[in-house]
Length: 364
Image 1 (cartoon, helix red, strand yellow):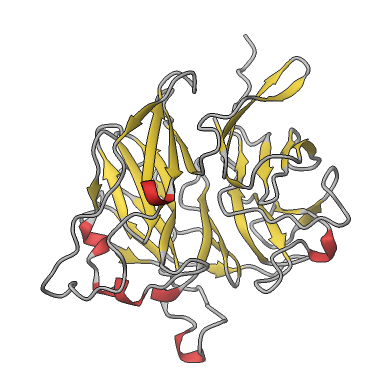
Image 2: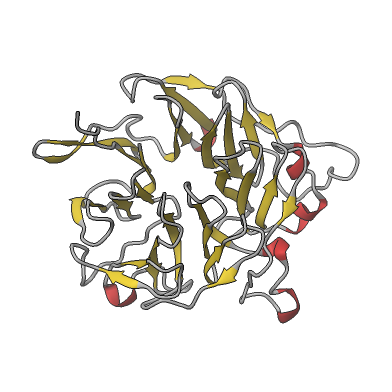
């Protein structure tokens, strides 16, 4: 029996789309939650559950769950902070105690994790029926120094659950560095050693507590290996994210937001470069994907099938995804472009140029 084709889930500013493969090619379905901003999608690796997070402004954050591959959806609880203290150490906290956006969403064995803006981490042991704030991270004194990278407040966008040990969770914060727990969130340690924030004063550039990690990805088959797209370039760790090595800047640029780790090859990853922080568009208007096959020692530029003139797409940190076997990649842009590669990122085909701005792409 042939293996089932993956489904590409595309979360946009105006709905969630499912893209399926059939005999004639990839087909874009009608939107779920039409007209509503979808900020995150998570797929339960142990079952058929799919989760979608919506950011509805005045109406707050909403979470929905499907257990039949999107045929029907049920609203579930959304993460929420407790009331802000009126006395004690945190009464003058500059950060709001209200969830503006679910920015990271991952399903681990028995636990669903949500990273939010502002930078609260929540976990659910009942499939999203209820949520608990991980106070051990939220109430750390170091949080007072975290700051926003693109938003007014810091946020948790990347969550990696160790496939060997569900109690080992690594999160990345913009701007607050990389943090790890080995006891399911009881205690935490900042593990950003080796990262450098070039935009900070010299005496603070190596401060682990203010590193602007744009996106973090883990190799599932070799979970000691992590990749990071940082504000200041690309990084790799081979010791469970404890120490980081800055990679040589690839051509055309080391700046960007997205990274995808090959699920079984620890030496392989893909990135989507932009010109710079000041110019968040492709270099020379030519959209490319950069790929390393040797742990970041060198990079290959993949451009076949991507627009090579007058292209001003930006790929957000969650909008590059790879299939479980590493053969198919999907990528979406802030200007509504959606591309897929069926040969491990070597060549690309455009599925749509007319979607709303794309925040997240997931493949399941």
